[in-house]
Image 1 (cartoon, rainbow, N blue to C red):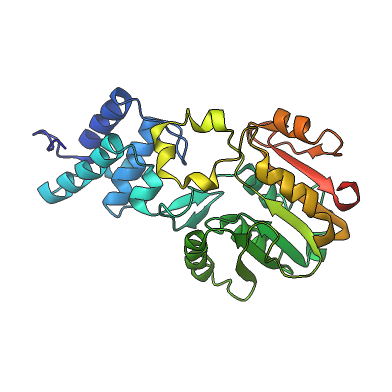
Image 2 (image 1 turned 60 degrees about the horizontal axis):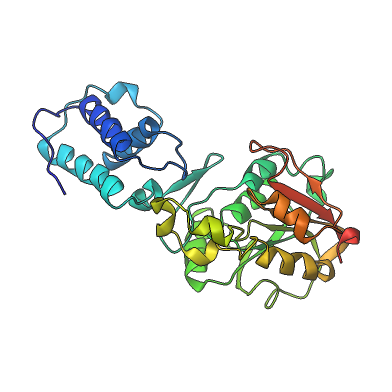
Amino acid sequence: MSTLPPGFNTVRDLLRLAVTQFNEADLFFGHGSNNAFDEAAYLILKTLSLPVDRLDPFLDARLTEEEAERVYATLQLRIHKRMPAAYLTNEAWLQGYRFYVDQRVIVPRSFIAEMIMEQFSPWVLEPYSIKTILELCTGSGCLAIMMADAFVNAQIDATDLSSEALEVAAVNVLDYDLNGRINLVRSDIFDNVPHKKYDLIVTNPPYVTNTSMAKLPPEYLHEPGHALAGGDDGMDIIRQIVQNARPYLKKDGLLIVEVGNEAQNALNAMPELEMAWAMTSGGYDRVFLVRANDLP
């Protein structure tokens, strides 16, 4: 890995250099930032323990040699290892929530997060009436934590097949002081789910097709593959969830499933299913909802 060229003494200098090098390296931005400037600014500020939302006051601050070298080393890791910024800083942000992350979990990102901020309106009319929520494939626990905030009367069971992912989720649940409301369970889909009825079952499961897995940018290869791969059509796990969810839902319960770019595959795989599609920043084809009575 190269050493910092001479003459780069300020945050502005390093930011300019980083943006140039990020663009020249053709990095992929899909884990929080969507462009070289924002990601470079975040990494620089975070490495210097400065507020990550206040760049301007520090642009012309002169760095010590040790600070400049430390920032440059972080930037070079991003370039040469193609590691997502979240793994370099051990934090990710989603809808204003901060979460601890490492390579045991995928970097938090979900269209369901937007819907949680709206308390799943208009499908949930009385948020205070939601008492029980099951989240499948919780990963870092981010959606469970957000739902605990959005539905203040709810107890949440959050499951994952990966014990390592649940270790990360436990860190985040503790950080938000939610141990009394979020129960983490190791379970292969419904295998170890508590025997009770839920108002909501929510999941952002693995749904990347085998073809897409083979074409993922290098940044995604740092994430646990089992948390992404959904089989030939991306629906392997989603089929199982849909086929087995009804006994775990109250009679007016709701299943909410994120499918990313695989809406057509979902429709092809489950043509008989009465799906409603939520509007998100990604459009009308990222998350579907099914009432308990419409499930098999």
